[in-house]
Amino acid sequence: MNKQEFIEAVVKTGQYETKAEATIAYDAVVGALTGRLSKGTAKDRVIRLPELGTFQQKTRKARTGRNPQTGKAIKIPAKKVVTFKSGKSLATSL
Image (cartoon, rainbow, N blue to C red; front, side, top):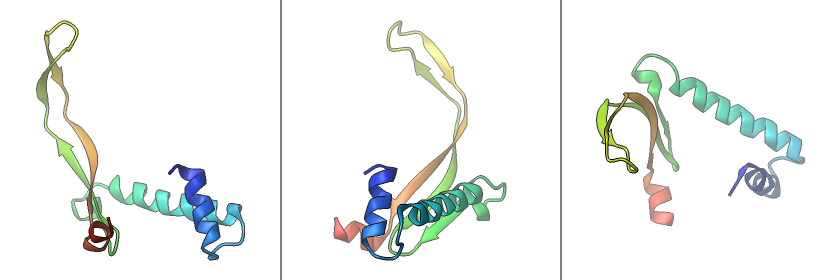
């Protein structure tokens, strides 16, 4: 499902009358998630949404990898990533 399909599905629920309203709501949710996860403190880097799951910012350590074409060792720098763990309701519905 892409963004447009998601917005159309939200409009079909009857909560929003137009795609424009649903798009504004979608953008607000994405902005809130992004803003919260990008904050500096550990408490701000976790978002728990009941029924859906938990989004969390983590830091991957720097490591050594291999170039698949040459086999040469390369250094992969540390970076921040977002992880998602599904909630119980979502997991059981699958």
